[in-house]
Length: 208
Ligand code: PRP
Ligand code: URA
Image 1 (cartoon, rainbow, N blue to C red):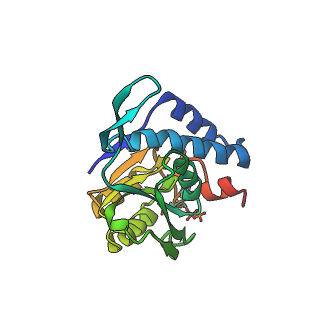
Image 2 (image 1 turned 90 degrees about the vertical axis):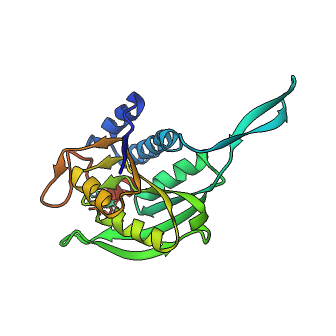
């Protein structure tokens, strides 16, 4: 059971802008993408490398390149898309999966509507992406689905997490490391993270 809070000053500054209700759709989307890319540096810190021989313009040398398992980015729709697109710029060889889920506004339970994963997901290191971990229902449903398709090595990357959601994920999937930019105070009676940033999908896509 592990959780990493990436509290780099650049990330924290951008997260404050993201939280601000005055931040408009375009800036919100760009900030969420930038935070995801910065967080990816920490989330990928343990990727394996191997020394390869190459020639610089000056001399032959040995230099590290990524090795080990290939990667998969899996976005929980809708809001995880912006994270996947951004991290893909850093790791362009990663394959991308999509899991469509939305929270029923009354029960707060996740409703599944889509899933398309790389066929060799079991052989890949998987980064499951969603900006918000609130009740944890969506993340647990996505993790269940990933594991049912054979995924074994999974990190969950979120921008904001509530303590309630962290506990739910850690109970259901204790092997999954959670990487977040912040752990907020609690959930309100509508299942929103407090202080949070509101509805991530609506703020990214301007649908409210
Ligand atoms: C949001 C968010 C997560 C989920 C988190 O998605 O992007 O997927 O809520 O809540 P939970 O931890 O309580 O399950 P939402 O259901 O609003 O769907 P959307 O991205 O399509 O708007
Ligand atoms: N989903 C969101 O987008 N925001 C919250 O605060 C909780 C769930």
